[in-house]
Length: 109
Image (tube, rainbow, N blue to C red):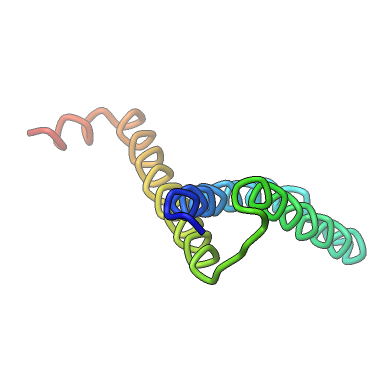
């Protein structure tokens, strides 16, 4: 496999990890107390994500999968987790500052 194809595959795997994180958050919104519904939804989620990843990877490098592609998916997933955590903490602190003006002024003084 050419190095350009490997770099494109690594970038795709990393970005797919980010996509997978946000898509899994979206999927969690549909979970209920019904176990049969949850299992069927999870099964469809896994099959759909696997098909999307393998189909696009097949278009990039004829479906060759290496272990470091999965490592890049994990790193992308972890990066998206950290980014969401940082953004949500900043939004919460911004709401606190907007509510209490004294905190806002004391923060800069």
